Length: 202
Image 1 (cartoon, rainbow, N blue to C red):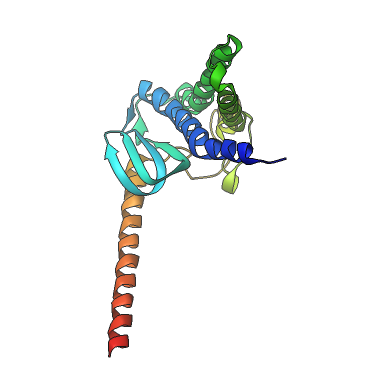
Image 2 (cartoon, rainbow, N blue to C red):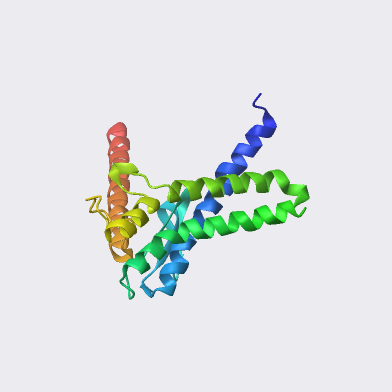
């Protein structure tokens, strides 16, 4: 039976564990691409309007599971380099899960064992989702499919022109356009409200 304890566990999973695991996954891209000479890397956490930006970290106002990594280009342009980048999220999540699992097996975190077991569950969920080759939204290949295609054919063969890892400059331009649209909508709402009250008084 789903009770209060389960509800609390669900809230913790949705608003603490999932965002943290997602962030760890994105750092896999960041670390590997950084080693390969990525230019203009950025870790975006959350969605919606920007809360603040500091160097390569971009924090958005709506904190949730949505985080992503971008860069403009990398110096090392080889099949091995791209395989390494797409393998980054899989490797970092697997490493984190195995370390925590080993600590739990050696009686660490006894007081918070349920939390860490749940944490490992979500980490391995992302590992499986990334590692098993499959097509996702709009026919986009996941990391496992890209790695498979690179190993077998030496290139992506999915014919999807959208980049799996977006360019930071393009992403920033898109964001600025969205900000302008939001401002326009807000001003229209203010103008309509003022017109409504003016008409009402008249």
